[in-house]
Every structure is written in structure tokens, then in C-alpha cells.
Image (cartoon, rainbow, N blue to C red; front, top):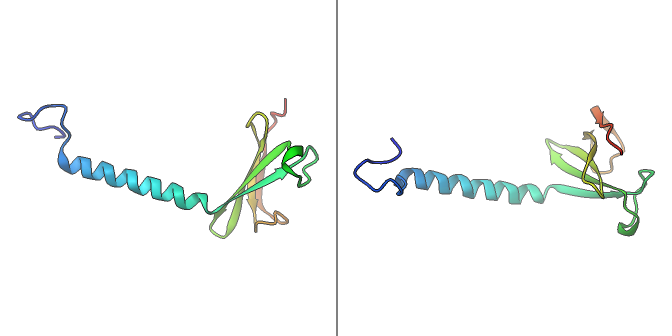
Length: 105
């Protein structure tokens, strides 16, 4: 039972409140740590690394189990175009399957 019938129904069970607070703190900590393990890549229309003023694609590399999970988006729309894994942050060697999304409108 979440609520005790003798209490106001708007008051949350103290144990559940503690659990909820714990979950929120763990989630915020996990998100904060994950942000430190991410890399941003800027590419022009030909997928060459470029300066911010020439950007067409934005790539995000997330470190997972010693690999880079790479997600590539059209910068102006945020539409996902490529997803796959690389062996390291240089993006020189692909690992496994890559998905190329056909939504380049």
C-alpha cells in the first residue's frame, strides 16, 4: 500500500519518498558522468572535419566498453543519419554494423 488510509492521501509514504529521491540522485549522477565520456565532431557536407562556421553534420561519440558509439546528425535539423561503433575516438576503424538512415531531405 502506497498511502495509509488514516493519513492525508496527498502525503507520500516516507519510505517511497526516500526511494524516489535516491533514484533521482542516481539518475542525475549517471547523466553527469556520461557527459564527461562524450565527444563532439563537426563535419562539412563531405564529412570532412571542419570549423564551427562550416558545419553541416554533428557527430557525437559516446565511450562504451572501450569503443566509441557514434551518432551523426544533420546539424540544422537534428535528424539522425548514421549510427555505429568505432574502435577509438579517431573514428578511423569501424567495428560491427553501421546503420545509414535515408532521411537526408
